[in-house]
Image 1 (cartoon, rainbow, N blue to C red):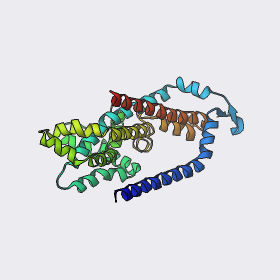
Image 2: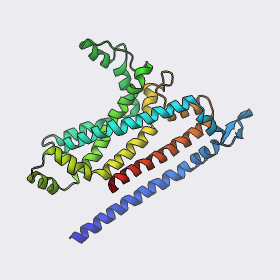
Image 3: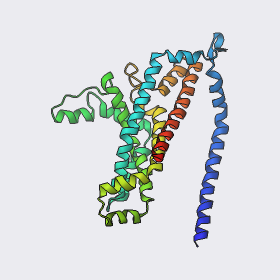
Image 4: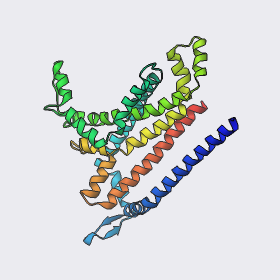
Length: 295
């Protein structure tokens, strides 16, 4: 029986791997042409009669001295830090709480996951109404306690934080569900043995649950980091990168450069930069988790 169970589990994993490989092959075949064009366009610019002119690495040289681009990179790194330092700890806390709830576990699990399945465009429109300076819900609540409201996404001082909050809120349930599954995979015998030895719930969480969740936390951290670096739709709907580029990230700058200014080569160079940035920071994140495991 045990052997047959292991074989069944092996073939299930194998089937998942085949499906995943097929999906990636399908995606690669259809994305090959566009990726090839990006790699070519990054070294060119449009000349007379919309003909491409080879300029070598000049687009990358211009990126280094482009203050607007550097500001967008700074914003994306700030958002990545917020995702790793605020979103993931809060998701972990929720996962631990929901996993230990005696009643209503399915209800809380579903409720926290609902924002994930809602379109980012819808969430952007929703939070626009919440932040509205004239009739927004946030200003209405603040006025009840005697605090004067403001235009949260129309001022440079508050626009960046206001643009980050909706996305952090949207994907808390996503990471919570992954961590929740990891917590549920931990054998109950381990927690029961700790309780018999007199460990409190807090000690069990910090000494047993979180250390055993390190592989899951690494996956969540990687997803959160990459998602923060390539964020586009929600911020574009919410602020469009404004006011005065205060909420602009590299993906929005790339979009405007290509479709508004028609600088296909420069926009392709930004796209390549985002890919390289994701690869480098993901590698750094992996090294950080590896060092902790060795220590």
